[in-house]
Length: 195
Image (cartoon, rainbow, N blue to C red):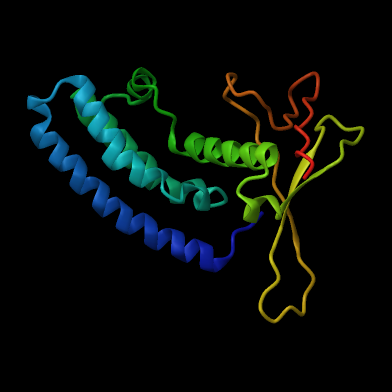
């Protein structure tokens, strides 16, 4: 799915203002880091900076990786500040030790969990009315989630359908899986509860 120009413009504006705010808090964390233990530093980093990175991050799903790289650089800088690592050390082991997902994985996780919650609980209703599950076909991917676009105030056009691309679930502990082409047996999507 290609994002619209409006979404890209709003996302880029949000990313630039978010970067300024996050780097300010990371600099402040670095100043007080010598006086904090590891758990306190991790808690502060998660509550102040990660909450900013996670706010409305599902809007970034369809953006090119070059646009979301800025957010990943912020998270890398935050991880180094928490563990007192040098600026140029490799960050993947640090993220794993902190049990933090990378930015693209966080975005996918949020989409997966919101979709799963909406399909299984029918809440929130404004999202549940937009999402439908197409019945399984004789393909390797068992089901497809479809998102309907609301009618505009003009109401002249019928609602458009957007098919969410299947996301493989990199999280084995989740109780569901999106259709994944490399799995030998397709996992069915949970059917939405009947009203």
